[in-house]
Length: 419
Image (cartoon, rainbow, N blue to C red; front, side):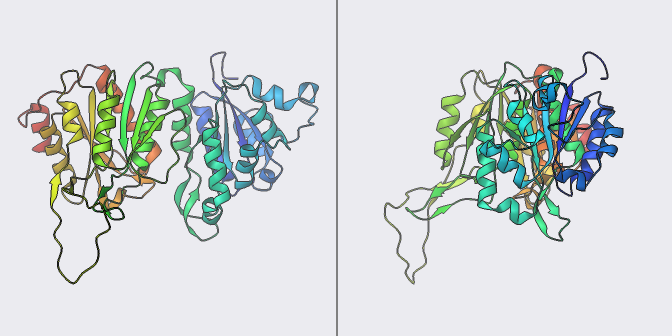
């Protein structure tokens, strides 16, 4: 142990090629002052040895449930009882299936099931893209989220098999950041605060089968909701149509249209401390949607579009408005347009990104813009980007920054513009 106050993590390793990344993760955990107890499956030992993990963790590594080094041969009890969290990285499709269905046929799966209710369980999936996209795997992941398991990733990119797509384990530094949000009490800086998040696209009906929408996946908004929850906030997520499972521990409200999103924001705004407008809300909606399907003809058709309500501006204009964070997805002049949007909406903070790069991607490159200027973040998985955005917003909020008129002649902002 690194001391009486050190956090203790059981780090589970299952049989995937990404096990090599877990060696680096162990090093980072130790560097952060976290005590690491490694537990491996038999298959994991084919990819990285217990000797390596013991050297890196500084603790004995356990594989067998009947290891006589464990008191009373009850490893599933002894190893999990004093743990502050259990992280399985990589978590293979087979291991996710075990957890989702309650199987306990080895030491690692048994201790995960035997853990105390107060011990969070996190899994970092890693597998071939076809395995990740398989309906059985997706059902298992959805069940784990329902059961309160924190699913970290996966990411998209090149894979060991030669394919490219979803299934890569998150990088060790990202996993460390996510784990620290859960482990470190100091990181729960929004404990006792309420946050409202909008995410995903909206769908504006033209007729019963057609509509106007956009390509927003909702991933950034869902990551923001997860990061806010990890920071201790009580979170309500108002989401347009997406294929994403709602983050565990977050109240999710599903909507379709921009007017429905506006209604739910108004209904849930009372007592909210922070508002994150991440959703890609349609700017226009058909004035008179048809009640029956429009039939095709050879004539040109004109649809009368009217502006939708600017939800963020409305929230920011309220007398008791929460701390508002806007998002600007632009296809050109990204930072410049975002600055103008922040000024127009009179909000303390906005996050700018390229719509062409961000939509549908699991990673993002953003610039945070506030009264002090521009803060460019390096490209990272959206979970890590969300953590940094929430941390920045929380610090501004707790320092007393509120929604207020934003002047283009502000000395801090002017200095950035002239840089």
